[in-house]
Length: 82
Image (tube, rainbow, N blue to C red; front, side, top):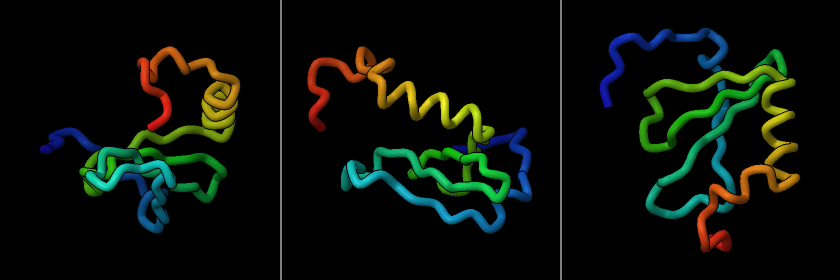
């Protein structure tokens, strides 16, 4: 993956990335890192030097709460057990 217009954010310099316990062995997952300002960075685990999405505390809270509430269950397809 080659990114021509990526911006390096200094908040990512000391980020500690982690994957979900549900990540599969083939590496098809995302990684998250808590930022010093309370936000969260999200990246593709297959491309650790690639781009990351940065979310404010309010944005990540709304997303996680929506996931807990089932707002995105329809995106899981038929087999949501994996």
